[in-house]
Every structure is written in structure tokens, then in C-alpha cells.
View 1 (cartoon, each protein chain N blue to C red):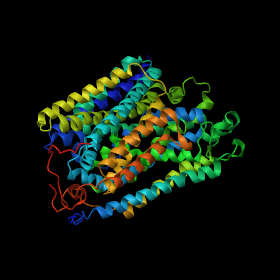
View 2 (spheres, chains in turn cyan, brown):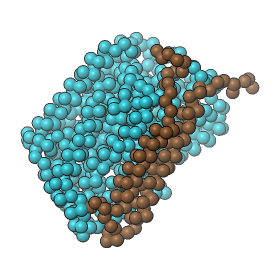
View 3 (cartoon, one colour):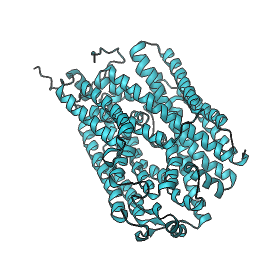
View 4 (tube, each protein chain N blue to C red):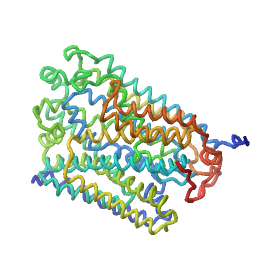
Length: 499
Length: 97
């Protein structure tokens, strides 16, 4: 085992753990209701925490390990694709906007499903959301844990399963006890870690290799395809545009991202976050992936392209610096998993248990159940990760697309179109979910675009057509969502229609 | 039918809707800023026709890096000049709880 690389990583993991514990004490001393505190941090996030918690939970191991690996194989065309995520923070906050934040307060929503349930008044929407979240977020989390433990093993020799357990336990414990505040605080630390890691990596890379201009000539003569567009990955303009949907605006369909749209304290925070968001995501994206094609020149014939960046880091840096920089992708994994874990747990506790099993559960039993379900889901995910699936990046992109196809149109139309009704939403949610899965299996990437585009367009059409064919939503509902000065009664068991 | 359309819309939502449309425009601008330079300078060119800026392929430099930076500046200006501060409380009536 390489102790010099491992030590900084262990220290760093320990530090995140402590922050999680501190957040728990902070949450405990607050006067607000448990649910609001545990799942959305009491809606008190300021600009720094908001920016990092959105972007760090979105930028996963894919950004730091998967993408440099893909760029190693197919060149700069992939780095260009990755730039489509620069605006992600701007879109998540800008599209959901103040309206989402206001409506969430009106109806006391603390999850995306809360919002959809109140807006469309249907248990089928709740079930569809739960299915989407469990399938896609579940597989996403497994991919992340596997990625994290693989990096740890490859770079330090720390055995895969032990690494997974260590890593998994830390994330699960701090998320379980600290809730949203712990996740947001650790996201900020991890986000800063990712930026610092990227900058250190660039500086050392440029010093040790003489910089990009020195390498470019060799790159062209040895691997000309890596600097071409579309390049070996066949990145056409249609495909590039579909990634702007996938990694950009449709990111609001990621439940762990959109829940952050209800967590900020005021509009100043939101504005600042939109301003910082682009810069931070730019640094995340450029910092690591740009090196991918050059690594090909330095270390050709790598068996597993995902190891391109970790190999580079280990070879050009002294051990303890390498450990610090490698902590960045591990941080990305932790920040992503922790926020997803919380969303998944809230689905079980809030969306299913509180809505349909025991609507009048006491505050204390909700708290106990939340701790328990976060813990249980985390453990299940760790167990699943013990036998790693292949093709990690594929799993991640697949999951992102699935979540977006399921939620995107319900969120946007639910927020901005009064005519959108229950039936439209059901058609749109299941239409998006099912068409996405079918397309991925049978006709992957139709019309030269990523499947998510076709599935999302189909889901939007379902929403519009079916809503027009069926009755308008009730006046009561419209007044609740659009009216002035209306505040919903706190959690009443809702009368549901029979769809 | 009863008078179901008659209710007072939350006055903040007009501004919310405007911001939503502005963001959609920004999205289109983002795609254009990144793809147009990249496609014009790079698409279907062989490696020896491609020029380099700071060691990066010119199409990537002007589209991916510069295009994204211009987008970031535009998004900052957009928020600065078109977005308005407002209360987020459920009832927008002065004192927040």
C-alpha cells in the first residue's frame, strides 16, 4: 500500500466526517421543524453553499475520472461536449427560479415529489417519481461508489472492498445524522477541493511537460484523430446539441439538483449563485478533462481509459500531493452520493410513508424513520457495489437521461403552464420514462441525437396533448399555485382521484 | 360556468415568468456560442488543417473555452440587469415569519 498517497486521503475523509457531525449539532439546536431542517436545510442556504451544493452534487466521478478517460479515447470532441455543463447551475436556478422557491413555501414542499404531488394531485405521479428515483438514482449511486473505490484501489493499493466499506460508511453516516446541512457543508468543502485539485494538477502538468504547445505537435503527428471534430467518437453537431440538453438545461430533472431550488434563503443568494455557478462549473470541466488527450501521448496503450488521469497524477507528483489531488474525485463521489442518498431517503419517508402509510406520524417518529431509511438505503447501495458493474460512465449517463426524461416536462409545465393537469402529467412522466428505456434498448440515439432528446420531446408532447384532451385543473388548485397570498393547510391527507 | 378565472395572480409571478423566458434565450445563446465557432473552425477538417491556440485545437479554444467564458459573462450581466429581488415567503405581505 502506498501510504504517502493514502494518508492525505484518509485525513481528508476524516475531516468531512467531522464536518458532518458538526452539522448534526447545528441542526439539532435549530427550532424549525425536523422535515424542513433535515431535507432542505431549513431553506437557509447562502450563496457559497448553494453554488457548491448544486454543482458538486451534479459533478460526479464522471467529470473527474470518466470524462478524462473518454477524452483519452476520443479526444477534444468529448471535452467540447463536457463544456455543455458549464451553464448547468444557471439553468437549474434560472428555470426553476423564484417561482419554485415561492411555490415550495406555499405548499410546504421539501422534495421534488412533494411539489409534483401537490400540483398534479395523483398518487400515480408519486409512484412514478418513486420508481424513477429508485431505479435511476440507485444505479447512479452504485456507479459512484464503485468508481470511488476503484480509484482508491488503483492509486493506493487499498483493497477494493475495504475501500468501499470505509468510503461508504463515512458518506452514509454523515448524511444520515447530519441531513441536508451536512451534505451542503461537505459539498462546499469538496467543491473547493475539486477546484484546488484541478489547479494544482494543471500547474504541475505544465511544469513537468513543458505545457500544451510543446505537446500539441506530437499529438497531431501521433494521434491526429484526437484533435479532429467529429473525431473517433462521432460527435456531430446534433449530438453536441443534445448534450446541452442532457448536461445543461434538463439537469433540473435531476431530483437531487432540483431540490436545491427550494433550499436557498433569498433571491440575492440565488442571483449570486447563478453568477458564480458558471465559473465554478467551468473550472470543474476544463480542469480535468482537457488533460485527457495529452495523457494519451504520455501513456499510450492504457488498458482502462478511466485510469488515465489517476495514472498521470501518480506519475507527475510526489505522493502526498497526489493524495491531495486524488481526494478531488473522491470528494466528487461523496458529494454526489450524499445528496442522492438524501433524496432517495426522502422519497421513502416523505413521499411514500407520510403520504400513504401514516399521514399523521409524529415528528419524532418521522425523524427516527428518516435516520433509519437513510442508513438502510446507504447500506444496500454499498452491498450492491461490492460486485462492480462494467462501463461506469455508461451507467451514469444512462441514469441522468432517465431522470430527465421522467421529470423534466412535469416540472417545467407544472410550474409555468396553468393548463397542465393530472392526466397530462401522468402521460408525460410515464411516457418519458418508458420511451427512454425502450429507446436505449432498441433504437439507441435516434436521429443522431442522444435518446434523452427524443424521450423528452415525446414527454412534452404527451403533456400538451393529453392535458388539452382532458379537463382543466380545478380552480382551487390554480388559486393555490398562482393566487396571491394563498398558503396551503399544513399536511392534510389529500383526497385523491382514482387514476 | 362559474367565475373560476377571477382571482388575483400573485404579483411576483410576472417577473418570474419573464426571468424564465430570459433563461431560455440564454440557453439558445449558450449553444450557439459554443457550437458555431467549434463547428465552423473544426468540423470535418483533417488534423493538419487545424490550427492551435495555446496548444489546444483552435475550434476547441474558440468554441469550448472562449465561447463558454463569453456565456459566463453574459449570464452574469443577465442576472445583474434583468433579475429582480423579491420576497420568497408564501404570503408576500411585509413581515416574514
